[in-house]
Length: 333
Image (tube, rainbow, N blue to C red; front, side, top):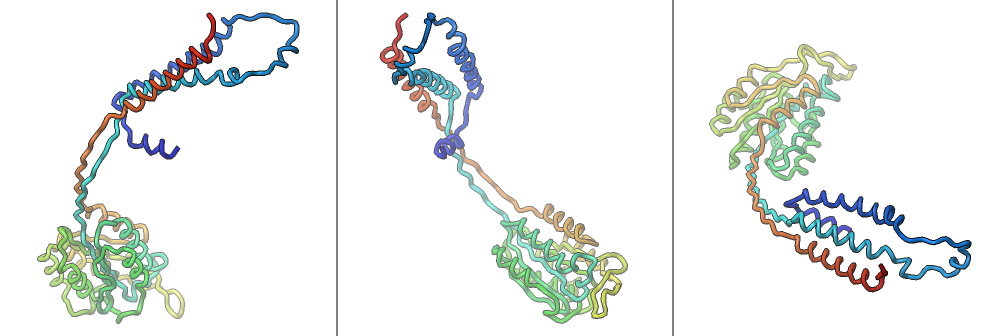
């Protein structure tokens, strides 16, 4: 059965309307077993006790074989008339991938709980979904707070990347918000990239207050290297709940939107504001649509007629039918 299924999966029919002829089987079978039965001669006997003792011969038990052979012959010939063809396709795919660096703020303010369960964990979850949706791209990860470092270089090994993303946590570097350092480190990861499209997705929830690299200077470098920077401001407007040793307290949310907008504008990117989990996910989905991987596919197709096999089978079934019909199952008029 698996062999038959796999065979027909590679078959196309040039004249599929010929299959309508198969509908003729229904009236033929109906006439054979219902109307013709009434035309057969019969006689009446007072009792069938003597006849029942005779039993059935093998010819009687197998009377259906000639009819099945005739139906198989008809079906095979109809399939041959539909002109089945085997189709062989060879695809030549050229992938023009995108090199991407995710630059994520892991400063203390990312503990705020206006995102569930907090800003950092929400960002990690959405970033993971983004990575899984781009299997042909090389992606790297940079984290920053008071300083920045590379958590994962640009790689096509997404399993390793996702493992390192999952290990991102608070307090592994000095606190603060060094947006310039985060952007500069991300740019350095793409410095030797030969990809036609290079982008950085920079997420921050605060104001630049630390670091050695001026954010505007870093943006100028990105522009000169043809690196597009998408910036995301994460956090609600006004205040957000924040965990403290004394319970949850409200903290003031400050995001340097002017800086983030300037970086995006200077590099040809776009600025987004995300105030909850759903909006953050929508931001990454929009970026995903804007930065699509280019696939160039050339398909070579070759078709070969396969009707002869069905025609040959139909002729064989018909020959066996005629042999049985006029020898073993021959009837007198």
